[in-house]
Amino acid sequence: MKQRIYVDTSVFGGNFDIEFSDHTIPLFQRINSGEFIMLFSSITQEELDKAPENVKDLIRQIKSEYTEFLELSTEIIELATEYISAGVVGKTSFADCLHIALATVYRADYLISWNFKHIVNIQRISGYNSINIKYGYKVLEIRSPREFEKYEED
Image (cartoon, rainbow, N blue to C red):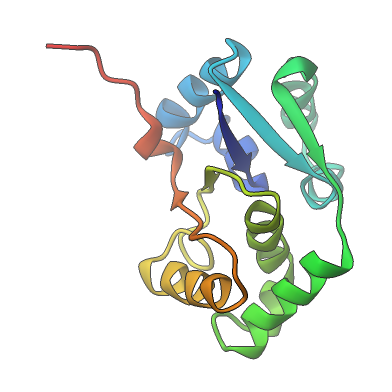
């Protein structure tokens, strides 16, 4: 069974950023080859509506058979609100919390992000997952695209 990966907005922009493209481009190639199912949310879509045209073109190039669209629900909003109430992040990071909650509720195998301040941060990950466990969800694996490099056998 293919792994289901939630890709947040930062990864799409990272495809065109010199600092992040070496790790992001291969990830999107792997998605388009069918190695993963990419989970794409309404929050990501809203954020990317403001993106430059090259980022929007990248989205259009992803094969629909390798994507799953996720909708917001009351459950997701409540979980995201709980992350903030618990002090994992501040109120201004609500959109980041929605990404985490979407990936959690829809049981993503991984959430992938370049956001090291609010998402791919060991203290934040611990906080998100303590809330997830408290409410009966599984631990969410949060990683950067760098950790999805494919290595050849020796």
